[in-house]
Structures are given as structure tokens and as C-alpha cells.
Length: 111
Image 1 (tube, rainbow, N blue to C red):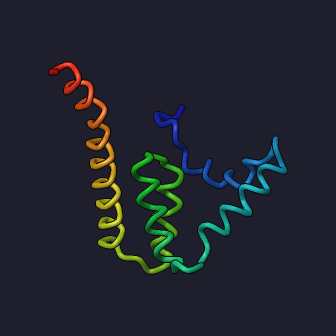
Image 2 (image 1 turned 135 degrees about the vertical axis):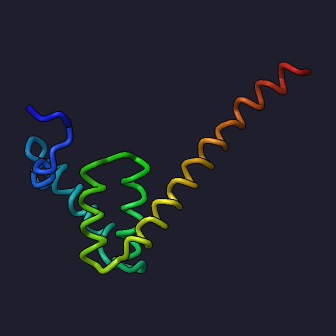
């Protein structure tokens, strides 16, 4: 029995996510392909964005897929880590921005 819920071999099942909802699956893959393919932004930039999002959202499947995608595109480990650092900084900033609600409540109570 595996000690880990995530199994790398499951990543190969991703193309089948529309198995029980084929129309929605097809629409998702059309969108996904368009969004992640070269466009105004180069494919390398999009792969780095995907890597940072995958990491901040803690998706082992996406981290696996986009680490390999970045490597296949010639993106360096330093570039990948810098992208992840940007994602981490954004998550910290987003968390701190949410303190606005807390501070509003405190200020109201201090009146």
C-alpha cells in the first residue's frame, strides 16, 4: 500500500477527466489548450506561470507536469525557483491584504 495519496502514474489519467462528462471535458481541454499555448505570451512564460500557480495551490500533479514542461522548454531551475518565489510573495501579500477586514472590525470596536 502506498504511503502517499498522490501517485505519479495517476498523472497519465488526466486526459480522461471528461470520462463521465464528455462535453464539459472537451470544452475544458479546448480552453486549457488555448490558455496554455503560445499566444501573446510565449510558451515559456505561460509554463512558468503555471508552475507558480501549481505550487501555490499545492497540486502535486500540476507541479509534476509543469516542472517537466519547464525543463523540456529549457527553463532553468533558477528561473523556476524565481517564479515560485513570486507566487509565494503573492500568496503572502494576498493573505496580508485580507487583514483589511480584521482591521476594519477592530477600528469599529475602538470607536
